[in-house]
Length: 355
Image 1 (cartoon, one colour):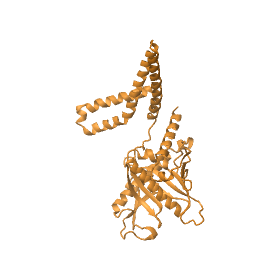
Image 2 (cartoon, rainbow, N blue to C red):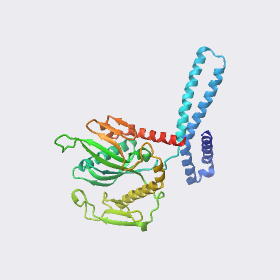
Image 3 (cartoon, helix red, strand yellow):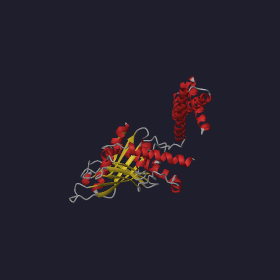
Image 4 (cartoon, rainbow, N blue to C red):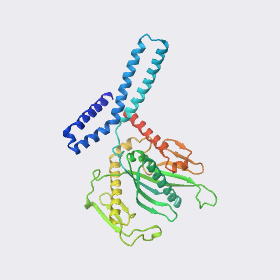
């Protein structure tokens, strides 16, 4: 590990020299390329340098402890030695995590698809609650959200809603939200006070750039139609809604949220690219997924991952066994207590696999 870290630091120093080279400075595209490469190494190098300082401190205190010291001074040096050893162990663990292979999608924006499952109108209403939850969480993170497609019900729910979240590390924080979310509560229409169980499926897809996935325009079938609203009423009389079919895969994406056909086409293409990328990555990783599943689950939309129990005011994530008795706060976007455990569990599993 130390050899790999030293090689990373050497690379970092080489990039620093290049960034100071007048020839590179005058070529802005080259300078930006080197600056971006260096930025990716900064956190690892900073921690490695802290580690080397701590190791030097440990050697210095060990030498001091070999000398004849006054009892009080020796006690102070011994205490410092123990603190440095603890810090060394902590830094080693952090560096091991930093050296783990990165998910190439972690820094991408995400497209979130929420669909009502079992439970009819109750499921559709809870889909609206999850849309609000993720929107509030995005606001807390300083991310931007944009509605891409929605199929609303007459009472304020959603049969389906698709939206974009743009922000640094959005996928790294939200990728474990894919799966079945179960809600247990008494519907407003329930006269006998019985608890009903409904489900909503969530899919979190990394947004695919054009460089990530190449789509031949000849492989696309584009249909336009009049946008329709709840109850089958037409939102407008022009064919502004767009449905795009990728013929080789059969994947379909559509959008009718905008009045402009061009804007709807752009949004539908963003969803289509994300779905095609997800299918390609799922196929590429199928053998690995079959051989070994992560502790935090497969991320499959058919897997029940979390229960929101209204009568008890609790949220339980079944993958990591975490239960929080703050349902109202979670639904207002206070998700970090759950997400942090999921990320830490995934990292622990990766460390175990790397041993």
